[in-house]
Length: 120
Image 1 (tube, rainbow, N blue to C red):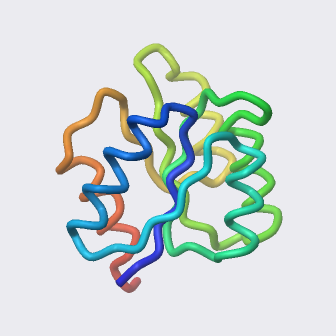
Image 2 (cartoon, helix red, strand yellow; image 1 turned 90 degrees about the vertical axis):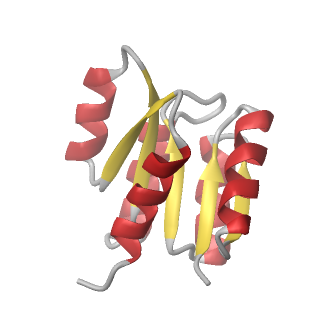
C-alpha cells in the first residue's frame, strides 16, 4: 500500500481522488492548499503527491519547490487546468515528475501514480 498526498483546494476533487485511490488500496492524505501540503509532506513522507497548480495561501508551484527543497527525491504529479501550460512547464523544470490535465480520467491519474511507484 502506498501513501498518496492529494493537494487541491476543491473539496469535491480531493474526495473523488481519495475514494478512487482508496479503492485501489492506497492510503490517502489531503491538503486544501500548498502551505498545508508542505506540512503534510514533511509530517507523513508520502510516496506520491498530487498537487493542484492553483490554490490559495500557497500555489502548487511554490509548494512543489518547497517540497523538493526538503526532499529532492519527492515524486510530485501536478494537476492543471487547460490553459496553464506555461505553469506546467515551470513545474516540470522545478522537479514535477508528471502532470495531469483537469478534467481528468480515472485511468490517467492511476497511470501517473503507478508509473512513479514502479521501482527504477
